[in-house]
Length: 623
Image 1 (cartoon, helix red, strand yellow):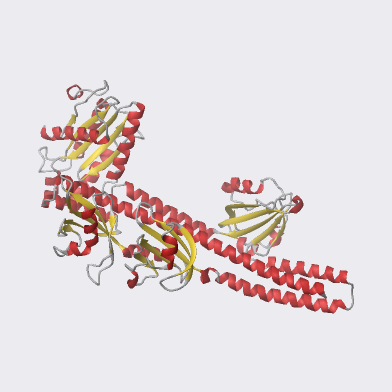
Image 2: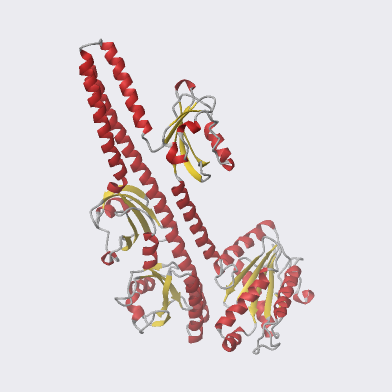
């Protein structure tokens, strides 16, 4: 009788232990999901703000260089409008002077509007001379308008004094809609906030949360202020719901992203399984207890122990048969000796259809290397799990991703393999990877011409300049400007001007033939070609090919002397022993040659005066 009580106690204890372990696994899996999503959203936010920085910094440099007159501001407006077309998350922009008076912008309705919308941005840049962006407080131009988040850069006068700011206004609706696309449960939340505790975006949306101060919350005080990256289980200061919270800092910016999954939603399937388990265990305990009382009067204690053992074994097998994961026993011959009923839902096969067959008969051939690593590992009895993820083919021909856990049986009798369908998870991961690749490509390409943008050009020139100096090679640069392009725009309109630039870009992109050459849009109607390991003579030949190729387009231009669109080109080169000590020296040299080409009548190529090295010839010799 004591043995029966002990068996019942062990069954209950094992049930609670299994439930506790399953609960821990569910929570660990949820933490991994929230951590991965938080990291991805952090990278996404970083890419958005970096792209915004790149958009406004280029315009800021041009305004500082050319001045704050109406023509330059109009040109800046056109540049920002073009950027907003290919970067819809930027919903507005503005340029204001040191007193907060709006000079130009997409949402400007009054002179003092900038002083109101960008008050904290102006105060920050007025007191800080650093060249970093500043993220201000979100604002609405009117109560009916969407919320905007200003990202600003300081504008300086030639003497370095404060001249004003340029801001790019990001749409918080974009982040809200993007976060709404993720399936994190009805009670899950995603938020984007500044490191000082200001809440910017939160899913689920509530207008009162925008700009709310989280600094005094338990979550912020006890976790975020001590570590910018972490995973905690904490009750929300907003709605009091306990969640598994993964937060990650946004690289390069004073922001962090938090993804929180409601604990009760994460554990909902586990709770249902626990209730079912308790019912089964209750039935088992009742059966074993009843049998124990009945057998106590008729058979010996040893017989009772043997029967209790077999009853317990059957009960545990019943649990395995009802598992949603596919459980397979594989012998030393690498054939299936047991297949659980979950094969019907997971693979579409009856268990008996798979029994006795080789383990790799439904394996997708391209994933064989992964399978062999998992199943050809040395068989031992250490009990260590081997995990792998690969594709198999269902009975209907469909491919699915499965995650398998392989454990070696005692005495090297084979394996027990537990498999589960992770197709949905793999699909989501692939989609997120593709989205990040698309964002990265947008950050490197000019939206109008399809050429490399200014930021990519600057990075490439810096890299090639350093390589040329390190390897003792020549680096050539061609600066290109469309002749009388302002007159072209005035006569034919900006859409025609855009088509003209696009046509010229297509011609230029086909000229360099080597992998290291780069054609980029430098700004406005200016373009550039980087030619590594190319002497000035070769660069001049390419420049002339470019000039003639543009002429052959025969694009009508009544405001230009030849009555067609032409270009002027300046060519410069930097040799190991030349006077160029930085990429900017090479740019200045090519710009100077371009100026000479313009002054000499346009539609021609000019070579900059070389400083040294036999490979760089004098302009007169090249011409």
